[in-house]
Length: 457
Image 1 (cartoon, one colour):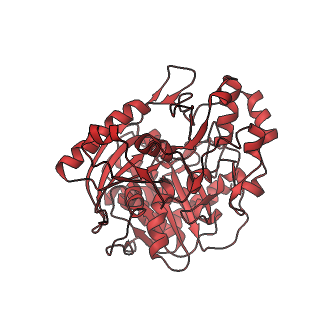
Image 2: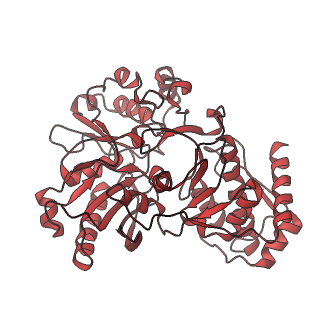
Image 3: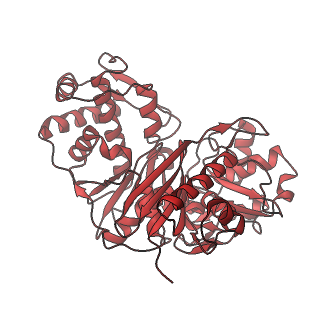
C-alpha cells in the first residue's frame, strides 16, 4: 500500500471549523477553508451546527480532491465535547455547547459525584468544560436520553464516525479534563459507572490508529476512493504537541494558541498542580501525563480589540514600556490562573484601534502565558503554535519573562501538522526556528517584573 501524501485535516475549533490539506512529505499546508463555528439556540439546549459543518466538510473534501487529490483524512477538534449516538448511529440529542451554564443545584449535585482532582487531574471548570458535568446535566434535562444513548464518542471520533461508521474515543480527548479518566492508571474513573454509562463509552484508542475507511455515501459525495483511510483523531492541543514529541529531547513546553492558550510542559519540574488556577493534566498521544494550564487568550484578545486590531510600531512599544501601561488580569475571569479577578488598566486606557492598546494586550497575553508555564514547572525551550506565534510583541515578551528560548512554528495551523503526522512521517520534521532575542530585553524584563508585582498586590 502506498503511503498517503496529501492528508485532509478536519479541524473543528471553538471559533471556526476548518478543512486543511497537508502535503505530508514537505509538511506544508496546500489549502485551508474555514467556516464559523456558530452555536445554535434552537432545540433543547445550545448546540453546534454539526450538519452545517458536515455539508461544508464534504464539499471541501470534494474540492480538495478535485484540485490536489486527497489520500487520507485525519481529525482534530477542541476538547470538552462528546456526542451521544442512538442505536442507529444518529445523534440521540444535539451536541451540547460546553459554554452553556448550569443551575447551582445541578452544579452542587455533580460536585458530590465528581472524583478528586488528585486522581483525575481534572479541575472543576465552568459550564460543561468537564465532559462528566455535561453528561450529568443532559441526563437531568432529558431523563430518557440515557436509555436512547447506545454509544458515547468524543468529538474527533464523532466526525470519524460520520466518515466511517466506526465508533471510538481517543485517549487525548477522554483524558482532557473530562473527570472520566485516571491519567496515572490509564483507565476510567468511577464516574462512568455512577452516571450509568460505563458500558456506553466507545473503546479508547490511540490517535495514531486507523479508525477505518470512508463509507460509500461519503465516497460518492466527495469523489474520494472508498478505501480512503481515516485516523482515530486527536484533541487539538495534543495535535500541536505531537510533532514536538517526535523531535524534542529533554524538557520543553508547547504553547498552543487560539480561542484557548494552552501550555503543556514535558519533562519539567515536578510541581504540585493547583486546580484553583486552571491547571490540569492532559494525556498526550502516547498516553502519558502532561501538566498543563490554560486561559482563553484568543477570547481575551477579541474582548480587548473589539474587532479593531492595530499594527504595532516601535513607537507604540516604547510608549507602553516607558509609561508602564498595563492590563492586569483577568480579561475573561471564568477561567485561567487568575479566575475571579476583574481586569483593570494601569494608566489611561488607550483608544480602541490604537497601537498602544495592541502592544499592552500582547504583553498581557505573554505574561499570562508565562504564569501558566511557571504553574506547570516548565523548563527548556518554549514552542509557540498558532496565531500568537506571528505576534512579535507577544514572542519578545515571552522570551524576556521566561528567560528561555522561544521557538516559532511557521505553520498557519499547528494542529493540522500534528494531525497529519498521525498517518505518517516526514523527513522535513525538524525543530522550529528560534526567535531572535529582543533588543530592548532589559526594558521588557523590568515591565514583566512590575506586572508580577502589581498582580501579587
